[in-house]
Amino acid sequence: MLRIKEIELANLHPWEDNPRINDHAVEAVAKSISSFGFNVPIICDQNHIIVAGHTRWKAAQKLGMSRIPVIIIELTDAQRKAFAVADNKTAEIADWDFPRLQEILNELRGEDIQLSTLGYSDNELHALLVPEKDFNWEEFEDRLRGEQGSKYVLLPVKVPRPEKDAVKKAIESYACKHNLDEKDSAILAGKVFHHLLGESK
Image (cartoon, rainbow, N blue to C red; front, side):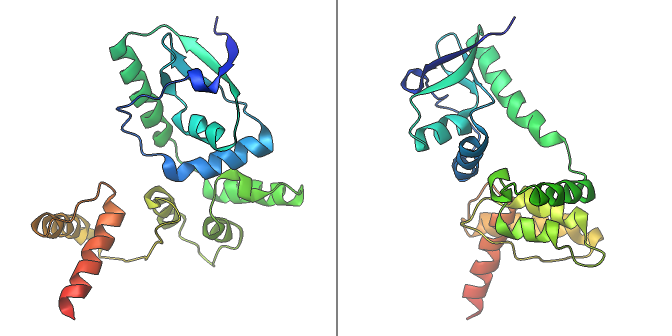
């Protein structure tokens, strides 16, 4: 049986090799915790190394919390790493039913719930709550997946569907040739576009 206990925030240790980039999500998680409480415990191993909940841990630091709820589980080093990767990856698999989400957001707005505490940017909320006629929900879903935080803005570009893979390969090839490095494909495309504009001047 899993048991939740509160421990000192300072006694938790992040996984130093965590491949998940989460700094851009800390502010949204902090808002959620401030509004609804710390209702999802952090999972850590017997050595207090975080397995799941790095963003919540950073948010707790940002909020100046001293104690937070955790669930401690016994894991080998390999099991801890595998669980951490699986926890993040499986969270990406589910999709949104955007029309239904729009209905729920409108219901919550009618109950005076601050929608800004739900993790969506102002632009995302505008698109969800004031959709254009025949709004392209598939395109909007791609937009949500591609955003990396307030440092970047989305500049929609459309290419013929049959040419999608060729365009992606061309972007990657150009980036490699000009030493443009970026893990996020949308940001990489922006860097390539910016570099091309600079060359054309």
